[in-house]
Length: 320
Ligand code: UDP
Ligand code: MG
Image (cartoon, rainbow, N blue to C red; front, side, top):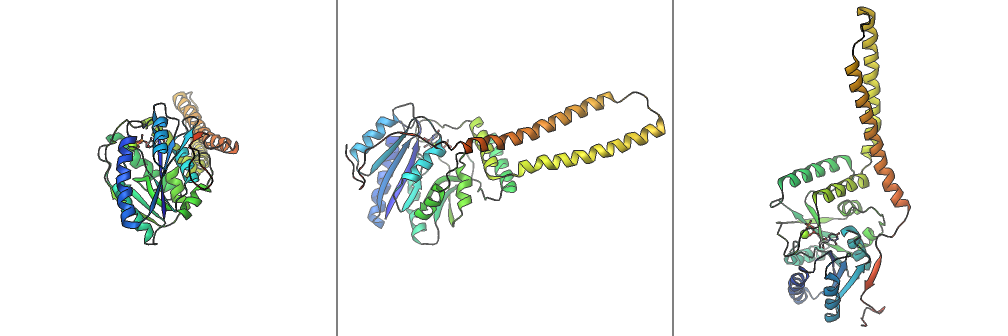
């Protein structure tokens, strides 16, 4: 059994040595207990610090370390995709480099897959402790909303830290979409998933790459990628407004017939014009979002571009 551990890294120079130490300890324990082999696959996502040179050193010193290095920052989604494509293991793990995903959970994940009852064992955050309250609030709203408007199940608190069988990895790699939203993709491919609860821990070094704004855009990506309900909202709003305007016409005709027609009502008219304009722009915006994603998708651009990788022979051995 070979287990591949994919580690997306973006400016993780400070965290990597800690990560390597922790993962090697777990590796040793697990190969003693289960006799499985390990392959570490780091993906350097266009880091601006010394991450690449650290990875080069790791790969040189250790035979079971490989790395892929992108030509620029393509985002964590692209890094995970690249890792999954290049992984050779029977089981594949995705893990952050900052030790927020405890390696101590790997044995339990391994056993879950070995039992044959699951194709995926994933970690799930039980609480959002230590997170800014506003962020937790919006995160909760997002999960409620997306699960209501999407057929794909997107689990609240589920993270990318998971171990999957080769079968599931192949399924994910077969989804070559450009606008990637992993939480949705994991749910979409299906397979039996076991959830392991875990407590959020602070990152060991360096800092988070996710700002509130980035997360907001990411959540929009999730909605556009896994639901077409917003498109339907436009039509429903249109019908609703038609009905309302028809009632108003009837009301105005009756009123004019009964009470005559003194000139009044321009403020309400102004409000209505504004309101209609707003709704129309909103609907156009929604359409635009889908169109933009379709546009990017039809360009068939590669999801990432490799600049460098450790040299490897076809049989898996390395030459320097
Ligand atoms: N990451 C990446 N590309 C990016 C941003 C992040 O590969 O553009 C990696 C990062 O190096 C880390 C993981 O994704 O290993 C999670 O990032 P981070 O810890 O910043 O996110 P958080 O844990 O705060 O959600
Ligand atoms: Mg982190």
